Figure 1: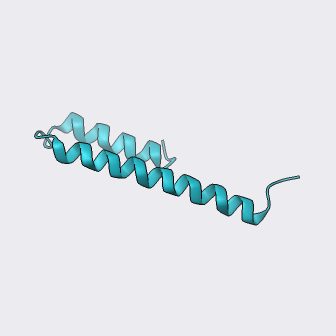
Figure 2: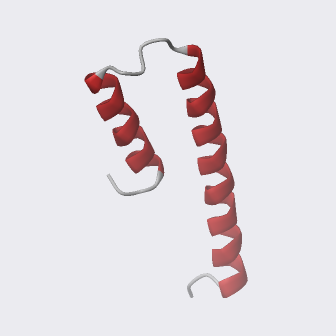
Figure 3: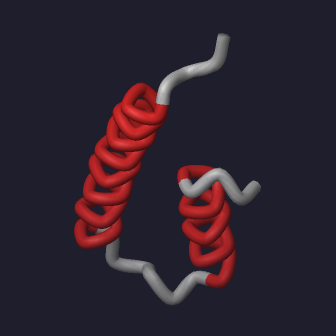
Length: 56
């Protein structure tokens, strides 16, 4: 049998918390970097965010 609604909500909450932690870490790394205007860097950032958001 599948997961109950409560179990699905718990799994979703865990994923949301992990995503928030990863995005917070990513932001802190970006704040430490000087060259944020790089087109390649921008593309990589977008790719990472899409991956974390499950839209790869």
